[in-house]
Amino acid sequence: MRRFVAFLLGTCLAGTFVTPAGAEEQVAQRQEQSLRRAVQPDAQMPDGKRMDFDLGFGLFKRNWVAAPSSTQAVDGLGPLYNARSCNVCHPGGARPNALLDKHGDPVPGLTVHLGQAGKAGEAAQPDPVYGEQVQTQALPGQQPEARLSLTMIDGPVIALAGGEKVQLQRPEMQLSQLAFGDLAADSHAGFRLAPAIHGLGLLDRIPDAEILAQAKRAKADGIAGRVNWVPDAISGENRIGRFGWKAVQPTLAQQDAHAFNVDIGMSTTVYPRPAGDCSTSQKDCLAAPNGNSPQFGNVEIAEPMRHLIDSFVSFAMLPPQRQRDIDRIVAGEKLFMAAGCHSCHRPSYDLPATAGLPARRITPYTDLLLHDMGPGLADGVAEGMASGSEWRTQPLWRLGHAVAGDAPAALLHDGRARSILEAVLWHGGEAAAAQQRVVAMSPDERTSLIAFLRSL
Ligand code: HEC
Ligand code: HEC
Image (cartoon, rainbow, N blue to C red; front, side, top):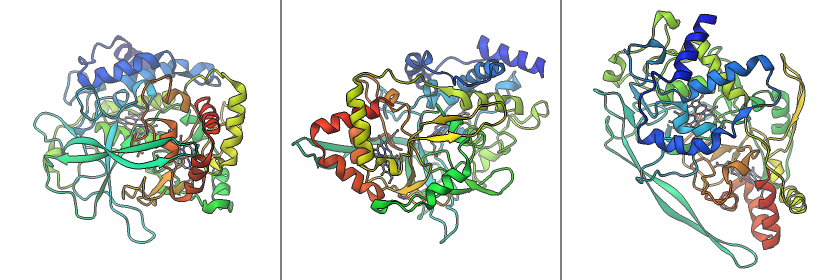
């Protein structure tokens, strides 16, 4: 193991096997530069984990290459994929702050998910040919599944108390050059923007009982969150979904392994198929060479590497915001509660101590449950037991980092909201009453509410 780690150190830190950055990596690198100094290990990470964290961050940024290559530790990319590293989509662990790059092309962190509603009471199904996600990149000799472009189109205009009018907008997708013909008639396609990964290790530690209790509690305002029960990829048992915009992954480790498989086309012991999201009708893709090697336990990402990535993702954190104008923030927090935002964005949890980690209180502002958010946010893509209009309450901690300074922001599952206010105004369905209360606030109250949210 020690020799293996020394070997990884060489390949991660020296960067000798990293191929030159293409245009997509450059976008990620620029955004990452401003965040690199920010991402840090959680204050309670055990001392002995620092090296794993740094190595894991190295692997998170590594550009994987096609098999066979001279170095088996870095090959296995594809055959179909969306990006060559985790970091391209989650720059520095953050979410992209725009949907289009400077050439007008969608950023790689904006992926297209596919889903068909299951029969009543059954889990949703992927598209029978294209799978769970549209892979827009392919190795030489393979065909990308489609070309993606998008246009921003106008949504509703919302008139706020005090006279301000807000023109909402959302991205509309165009898929062209579909390599395997049309999507199945009952498949829906929807955008998913890569979220920030900070603090997720703490969400992994929330006891199941807390989430279940929250789902049972009768709530005012017609709010009724429910659990997305999803299969554990190894045991097959149903567990509470926590990660992804529709809570379709039960554990952080499974989420990371799924990202390797579907986004990058690489196998792990959790998802051992080397051809990733290729379906049985994609014959060239299945026949392509792969990087599964006996040296790495017959998968492309050996267990030690997978655990290092998990160490990084589990402990990646951002520093808290500097609190300015405390009076306004306190007033904003009261308005947040009065508007009923906390019915879904549950402020805090007490985590019990677990192996090597002390008990602590966290403030993620989520119940991790699915809520019907109405037709404005719906895209018809069912995932697990979640319908096309249900979404997991997005945690609001570290929201201030996503809207830092005057930089543009890309909030909500498809990055449509350019500001916190726009994100709130898109809330409908179970959140319609809360949205109406924000519409009815005085301009000064709305300023306080937003100051509070920016302080998180
Ligand atoms: C092609 C872009 C892309 C790549 C590459 C990618 N991701 Fe993601 N990631 C996403 C998107 C999009 C989502 C949201 C998926 C969903 O909602 O189903 C996501 C979700 C996640 C989440 C869950 C976040 C949350 O809030 O629940 C984690 C953790 C994560 N990715 C880690 C990784 C790791 C680790 C890698 C590399 C092994 C990686 N990702 C590679 C796009 C990407
Ligand atoms: C019924 C549950 C519910 C209520 C009530 C609710 N939210 Fe949300 N909120 C969600 C869900 C679900 C999402 C993710 C929706 C999506 O991405 O399409 C979300 C997303 C957000 C986001 C975007 C976060 C991001 O990182 O992209 C903000 C900001 C937000 N909510 C603020 C508020 C505020 C402020 C209130 C009160 C006025 C509120 N929410 C009330 C469920 C709720």
